[in-house]
Image (cartoon, rainbow, N blue to C red):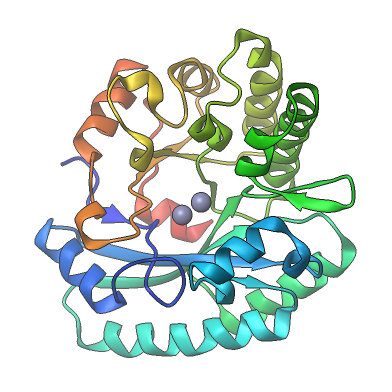
Length: 280
Ligand SMILES: [Zn+2]
Ligand SMILES: [Zn+2]
């Protein structure tokens, strides 16, 4: 296996299925030298009013959608304390990460800067699970359920948001670039321009991306990012790492070999080394 670290993983304090210890043991079993735990850090004042919040509450995941930074910081502090204690005993390197939903308001920036100062994560992943749209927050399921013209507007905003996440310069890398494809959105060639603008913003801001192996269901055209984006990423020489986005032990390092083959197939030569990533 070409990559001996896995950094995009989730545990059962939020929407994962297994404990940190179980995820760590799984990574060790796969011969990883490093595992990072990157639970969701999603803070927005109106999140409790959204459709996804109701669904998250039913699923028992309400804790991962926070309407204030103090609450989110307190959750992560307890979580990181536990991880840092484990790290002292373990033979594998354990890192404290977070998968952050980026929101572009002054309040959000202030809150997030405070979170970084207090929590001192080893790395932060930038994600766009939500867009701000018509005074509310929408996720990819809301996009998929909207009327077609509305859905197109949302998807357009999604790609604009990816540009803003990259340009913010806050993140070690961007997660699952074309996430809406998970709900069948954005496959049409008419989205190539929006994708290429996003890829250009990523390259210009010296950001990096992941191949998210969790999305793999053969055929390979189902991967995130899709082959047409991977070609753009290769042409722009954007640095890439492989993520499993594991939410359970059986997903740790899953499809890493397929992701590796895909990277080679699409000419991606710029692979992120762990040390360079952490020095960022
Ligand atoms: Zn995600
Ligand atoms: Zn994730």
